[in-house]
Length: 233
Image (cartoon, rainbow, N blue to C red; front, side, top):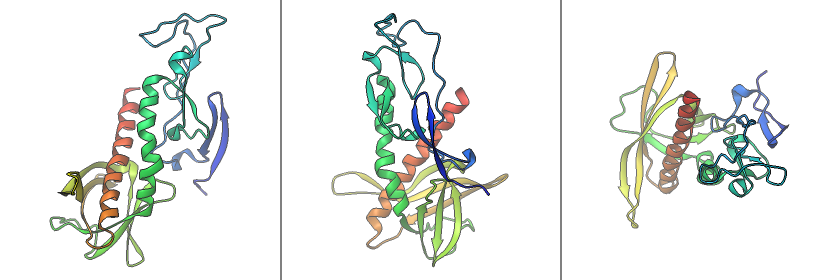
């Protein structure tokens, strides 16, 4: 039976924790890139140092290109490839991974903790019943779980989300724009695209739920950018 169980795998880039069944892997993960092998010079266009016995080449674990030690000496955790220890990054990849790590260290927890919502007044779909419901990210990070009165009413797979947009917003005391409503378009089945509109439920869960909306937007952008990379490689 398919399982999201993970195993420790040793690659030339380092130790990685990977899903046993690739089909059940988190949609936020990236594949390990192949290494550039036939390179005599540092691939940083502003460096171009020639490699020799003393000046060794090093590979960025995120892009796979080869650089000199000076251009590839940034060590940082690469959550998206499952590395269990900080790994070597070139300068540009370091900046990308550093920004993404905020999502894995902060926003994943927000999505897992969940948000409280109700149907948006303009939502004409038949996906949800009336009343309040909760939205949480599944433990395997593959789908959004919608629940009402202890019963599952919908599952939205992260990799099936086509767009995430604000349906309503407010401005807090610091002038920050906070979403109070969200519209999610996703593929429910073959040739069936659904638009789901939700509003943040009022009460003690209002602020955490607005943070949940912001975290989902970041989650969608992460997956959306990965799709663009896969289509251009």
